Amino acid sequence: MKRFQVMWFIMLGLLCTISVAQAGSVNLEYKYKLSEGCKYKITMSITTGLPGSDRIYTANINGDIAEKVIGIKKDGSIELAIMLKNMKASYKLIQDVGNIRSIPDKTYIITIAKSGKIVSKNNDSSSSLDKVTGGFDLMGSSIHGVVLPEEAVSVGQSWDNKSSILNGVAEVNAKSTLLSDSEQVGDQTAAKIKNLLDAKLDIATVLAAIEKEKDFNKYYNDALKDIKGTIGVAGTTVYYFSPLQGKLLKSEGNYKINSSISFPKTKEYKQLPASMNVTYDITITVTKQ
Image 1: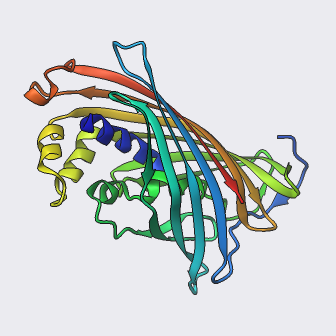
Image 2: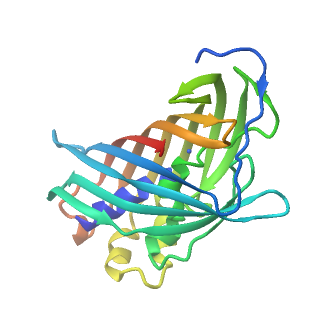
């Protein structure tokens, strides 16, 4: 059971780490004032089908994401404290059926450019898995998962961005397109941006990084170190961004993770096939409060 939980969180860490319009161009950039704060609600649903089984395993996560400006640098970059609060997970996964668990509150410090590009992350967590995944990549990228263009753009115009997740272990390629500059979200006028992304991860590379963590349980080291395979992530997120506020108002994402895993012939895996392919379907919704 624990082996599957670790693999599930690694998949999730990949995420962690992101239409009718009028003519003209629009400037898109984040706007913050010192000590300013924003709150968001996040909901996430994960559906998994394991090979050789007709059962569908599901996980649902919901909670709050709060951010507060703790510094504005001379170059205009913004230092934010991102706080994950009241996070709860309910899931049906292998033997744990219908459990509801609270996820500990966490705070991450990040620095972003006005475009939203993450310049740096400070992760002081004592969790080995958190260190390897970068922590913030798991949830926080739902807010800052789209990098805005540095120049004004017109409806229909696209821009590319590359970034890394899992502390540089994997590279993410993203292409964003401005679909509309006049979408109504409540009483706000928003720019509607479609973001396409793809990434590929080598499982052995991630597990090797986990293995280096001194406080990581030796059981996991022994059980996971010889697993090999790849994880591919592809997805689409639609962001609704307020040019006036300089804030994200809402995002709706759908992702598919395809994993191909081979297991060593050891006692820990004697009940598993030599290899398996698993697909995860993930939806994430974030709404500004």
